[in-house]
Image 1 (cartoon, each protein chain N blue to C red):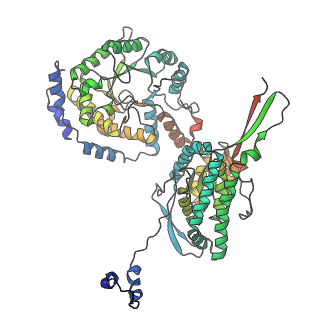
Image 2 (cartoon, one colour; image 1 turned 30 degrees about the vertical axis):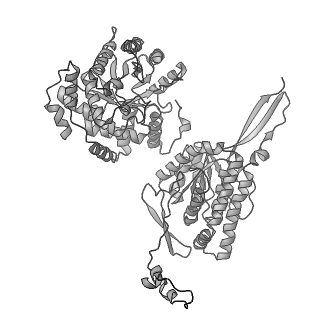
Length: 324
Length: 311
């Protein structure tokens, strides 16, 4: 594909030190063919995934869910209930795998860690003045360190979209590097850093591609579409552009970066379409909860209902699943 | 011909021979046939399966093709009915009554169409078909009157000994799957559908398998009656294919088996797994008889509230 040749022919990333050099690096990325991306997304949405393949896709999607609650009204009780659901999504069927992680605000990390200690489910925390990111860097770093100190294994940070749109790539880069350092932990492995680009506020797919490369060069372990607080959130086209970016980045640097679409993925059909995009864009290496996550809250119930439909043959109703 | 049509004629001239030539262009006009589709969530989609089925009159003549709904369509209909339930149940009983009366008004405006489809479907003369359509329209008026009286008749204060007030009030059950009567495609359908929605339930209707066309025309009246989309969803197709899915569906709260025929027992068994309320079919229903509350009460739940009195 033509859009892969640009990055591959460029000089390998010596992360640029001046804003001008960063800008030159990102401006050398080829533009996104918008009509082509939309056509590709529409084509990928026509794959038919049925019966046993669908059953595997549903279980894989469940294991990739970052079960999220990011409301002002979140209580410790709600987070504990969410953790219970993360471990055992369907209490009537123990063959359902647990989800990848729960995602909460920093002040509730402690509650989630207590509920999920010595389980395979991770605790992700949004940090760095989520969702706007409009706070002094010291405040954002403190926010992150608190979440890490409380035991978060994953940090979802937001970038400063204002700085990015103003062309101050250097500031965005430095902030990601600083937050990455704040993810270090003296008593264990560092927290995984997911960088939220908030694509709904970036102007166009070219900006999404540039922001993806900027975040990856700065050390992101994951790039994530959105906070869920801005519409549009994770559109399939944006996810596709980001999947192309991680594929090309690995081809160029050898480092694999994960992708997390978040917001707006509510149905099993949406989730399976995302898995098809992963498989046919980034490749099967990414079909793993270590490399692809879906940030969602209501999606899990739909996955469970579709799973029950496959195993029992009858349609279940939402009355039979917990609301949160 | 064009000259004679456009030239102004003096008033004094004798009538031109225009009538003799006029019918020629009319007869060349292509007929505009109606496409009979499903009624789901307030819209008229084709079946997601793309299937259709020929519908014949009682003497075997082809009438039209109707959509052949799939199990997926049935599932989509339940989703539409579920999302419409909350707002519909929350409307005031008086407003529901006004909307039901509006359905009667809309049917009256399409009377000729309903009469023709009843003649075709049941192989009867026009006079009895007129009576059937009148009875169907009057049935909406009948249930329109009931909407704001159900709570008065079926609810109220209960006598208790103690410093309490104890009140019972009827509430709609939820999503009701209705298998419409097979032999009475219009009056039978209205007789089972109207009481369900009058009480505040929403409905997924499987129309008469042999004669589904009046149900689709009824859907057109419903769609223009201020009835919110999704309150009534009408599927045309094979009852034996759709009914088991609806009966076993955990998000269906009640099941009216009026048109189930031999399937009734099997469907009742399937419905039991999720404690779905079931209304068994009557052996020899008389759709002309006034039904009273008999078809309303099966789709109501009674809520009883205790409240202390005194200071």
